[in-house]
Length: 486
Ligand code: SIN
Image (tube, rainbow, N blue to C red; front, side, top):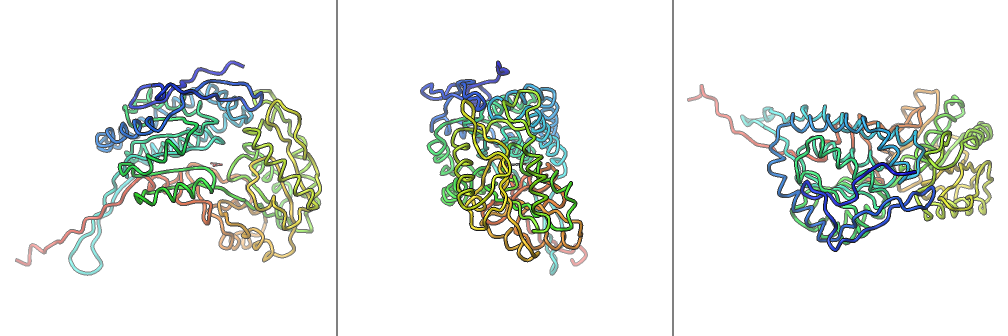
């Protein structure tokens, strides 16, 4: 399959340029292991060049009207959707997910642009009397300033637009470092942003295979004012530590270990349908993927059998082939990790209800897998699987279910299936997660605040909270005298 055209150079100050020294790196198709493109490999100097451009552009860009910025986002939204098949083909080729899922991501990703184009004009300060005395309180919002955006490979478009949308709306300039495994979608989107009218220097893009070398000096540079990262918790911790030096504002969307709770009173058809979405969206390569199925003992066997039937019926293969519902995982390390976790769970006593063995290469495939009777201490319940594997454990009481759900350092999302509204709402107050899906396997929505608690992150993306991550609140205290008093 020939890939759609996409730029392959760095984008700095409104121009496509080679990396310093001309280095290139290959991008692979995980379904075939073939090289799709050679992309410019940014060095530390390119990071500095990109930040210089963002800093130069910040003053004028921050003073543009909200309407100008909203119009650019709206045009980018329409232009992205107009090229949906091109984006989706590219995404499937470099990331592996089935074409239909890539199309769904283009819609999801574009929606952040529309959402923030509509939210931008609503950003406002406040004016109010101090509770005591004659002072008045005036607050205004300002763009936080040049931002470094680091995005992952699993949603190559949506994770970029979820950051670029609010940054543009707020008036921030940016340097984007897309994941080295999937830079092509981000580069195509960069071209669209230029065509939508984004001025030179506002968005600079630097793919690199040396992330630490390139972003380290940028994070230490006091001209950088914001870091937004989506990725693993260990890397997030490292970036938070680096950010301490300049007290950099950080937003962190990190790992998860989502519990999926099925109670005895749940509608089992809905629970299985929700489980398929929560587990199989993006092939399980998502931080909101259900990682642990915690099922009431009285329905566990039936739920497991039905889930195994549903997952076992999914066709696995190259994402561009018709009928495929599960594409390749991102690379050989992903397959090795899933294999290790499944094999260890089986050694611990779990039973394989479907799947369980990776096919021969070429291609980084692992089949949909359901594991029953997973012992409580098994490692697969502690680590983020990031693959199409559903381990099932059982519980007897609500208290036990909550204890199992909260027994993790992560707190991104939880899913709850019950017909009892009282139980659902009270679980909503007791489960330690930033997002809770009630009788649904999908919480991701541009209008909803996406983010976690505990070691799953800091801050929120999307919704009205998302733009606040790119704004400073400045307060003016105004002493008012009474004109009649003179
Ligand atoms: C992620 O996996 O990082 C994001 C998933 C989503 O936005 O649904």
